[in-house]
Length: 350
Image 1 (cartoon, helix red, strand yellow):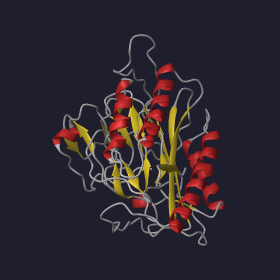
Image 2 (cartoon, helix red, strand yellow; image 1 turned 180 degrees about the vertical axis):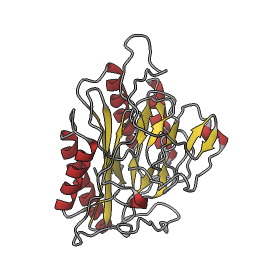
Image 3 (cartoon, one colour; image 1 turned 120 degrees about the vertical axis):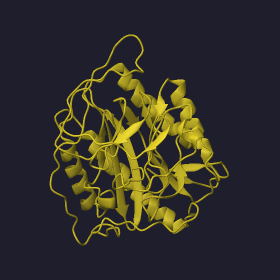
C-alpha cells in the first residue's frame, strides 16, 4: 500500500516542472504521506465526484481493433467498521488515526533481528493476499473480500495495517478498473471483465509487511490482459536493478522504460516507500525517471509498487479523500513487493 493521505487537505509535495511534465504521464503518493495529482502541469488537491457511476469507457490509448468496454466505478456503501481484539498488538494509530512522523532522515539499515521480523510479517502478508485473490470472483463484493481478509489477519495474530491509518476505514484497499489506488471496499459486486488490485498489509510483532496484486475477473479483454501482464513485468524490472550501492532512481528508470516500450504510462503520483516498524518512511521509491538522491545499502527494506495505466496516468481524488481515479477513465494495474537489499543483491520478502 502506497503512502496514504487522510484527505485532500494533506500537505502536497510540489515537484519541479521537469518531474510533473516528464515524458510519461503518471501519479502516486510521494514521500511518507503526501499526495500528488497533476493536470496540465499543475499540482492539484483533487476534485470531487458523487454517486455511483455505471458507464462504459473506450481508452484513447486503444489501438485499432477491439474496443473494450468496462464499468467505471465510484465509491459505494460502506459497512460498519470492523474491530480488532484487544489482545492483538496494534500500531499506535489504531484508536486515534493519528500517525507520528517517522524520525528518519534517510533509509534505515535494519539489524538481523529486525530483518527476521520483517520476513515473518511479509510472509504472512503474502499468505493472506493469496487467499484473498482466490476469492475474488464475479458476484463477490469488495466488502466481502475485506471482511474475509480482516478475519484471516486477526486469526493469525496480526493487525490489518490500513485500518484507521489516518482514518482509512477498511483493512485492505480494493481498486477496480479506473480506480488507480486506495479504493475503499464497499458493496459493489465484482463484474465479468473487471480488473482489481488487492493491496494487503499486516502488522505482526511490531513490523509491517506490504504486497499487492491485480486480479482479472472472469473473461477480460486482450488489452486488459496486456495491461496486467506488463504491470507485473514493470514491477520486476524495477526490482531486478536493486542491489548494494545502486542509486534509487534506477528503479523508476527501469519501470518507465518498460511501460513506455509497450505504449503504457506510469502513474507518478504514488510512490513506493520504506517500511518496518513504521508503515511508510524513507526512502521514496519513484516509479518513473527522476533522480531521487541516495544509493541502496544492505539492510534497507522498501516497497516497489508501480501503477501502470492504459491512458495518460493523471488522477483525481474523490470526496472520500482516498479513492484515486484516472482523469481519463483509463484502467490501471499494479503489483507490489516488499524488498530487502542484501550484501549481494536483493531478497523479495513478500
